Length: 171
Image 1: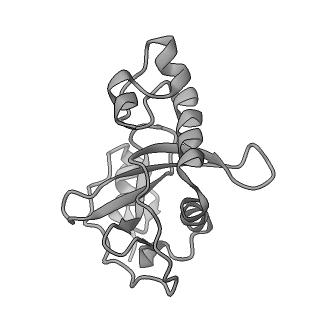
Image 2: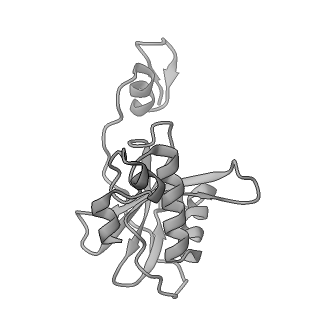
């Protein structure tokens, strides 16, 4: 089924495509059902809450920015989101979870073939506390936002550290 757009007079496949053509924000959607946990039985530590940028591969221009936050509607779960657009505070797409009870990461079925999202999970599994802090600092330097809470940083010492004073006490 295709939809004729009143804006560009072209056909679009989905209502979301029409909204995007008109410059309307997409309607929030319910998260897809979770994929069954992978056969990886290793338990991983809880990741830091925050936003991180890390280089992937040999080329410094190939990087990923992710955000990890508590999932308020599922107790003990953390949402994992990937920056997928130009606005570095709102253009994140949730694609997976971390489950505190099992210590496992899961990519939602819808994104199971997305290589960038697989890269993120592999990085999270391989990273330790120091790697996550360093990736948080990279994000903070690029955006001037605290990597833990996202607030704007204005004090030079906070910008250099990547954390505001309150978050620095918590980490």
